[in-house]
Amino acid sequence: MNSPSDSRASTIAYYDDHAEEFIAGTFDVDMADLYRPFLECMPQGGRILDAGCGSGRDSLAFLRLGHEVVSIDASERMVEATRSVTGGDVRQIAFEAAEFEDEFDGIWACSSLLHIPRQELGAVFVVLGKALKSDGILYLSFKYGNFERTENGRYFNDLDEVALRSLFASDPRLEILKVWISEDVRNERRGSQRWLNALARRRDRDAR
Image (cartoon, rainbow, N blue to C red; front, side):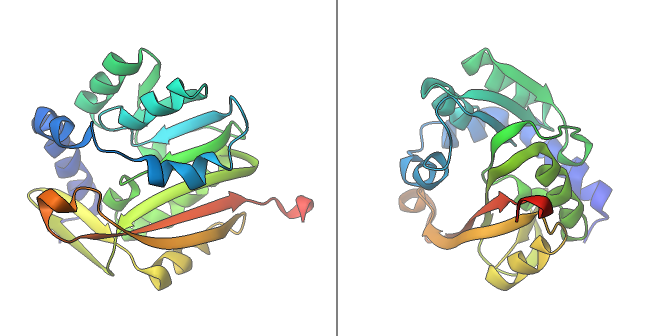
């Protein structure tokens, strides 16, 4: 296994080098069933951080529903792609470098935190928890499993329910609301693959 810094660099390079292929394979995927539990928790016109915005698919969907969206990604090509389809607030920022505080009603981290080395993921949860408003909602998803691996230059941190819950101990403000397993919406093209999904809420101690 490469060092965390090497894994991060090679993963970003993958998305920069394979941007057109990645966008073609993901932009038109129907995400409605995964949006629903997250959006049910959002206020009308809520402020959402699309953390790891990729092709811009999800940022665009939330904007069209009337939400205010800030999009971030560590890949320059993904930032360009999202900006081209949304014309919105899109920033090239790595998760660990984000400095938002009490800003968002929701954070959408779909298929993105899975590229964070496990030893660094707890610190990223703290960053995301800080970015949420009190009672704000975090959605996140990982490929289902419990191991770290590198595939075609991309680092993956696969999680199961036990591993996920242990990582949430890094920030006691984040309270898990729901954990569920879904089938990959692209399974008809890719073969069977499962995803671990979760919703969490920021609960400040003085609000308990």
